[in-house]
Length: 79
Image (cartoon, rainbow, N blue to C red; front, side, top):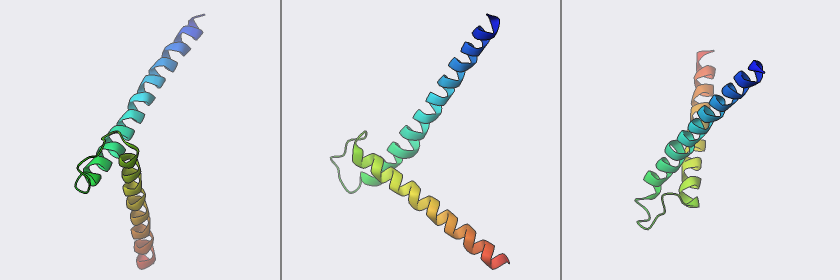
């Protein structure tokens, strides 16, 4: 019985932290950045729209590929 209570407590805490983490990633790192990038090109943009999410995701994909390319070029140069 006490083990079940502790398990439920930790499960609830983990779900809460995970939900906050996902909301921060989606809301700030993807939607907000996508909105900031897309806003100068279209004044009539929905901050929660599909286009904003796509622009934010494309930005992060470009950043990741650029970082990977930079890291591999630095590794080649150092060898």
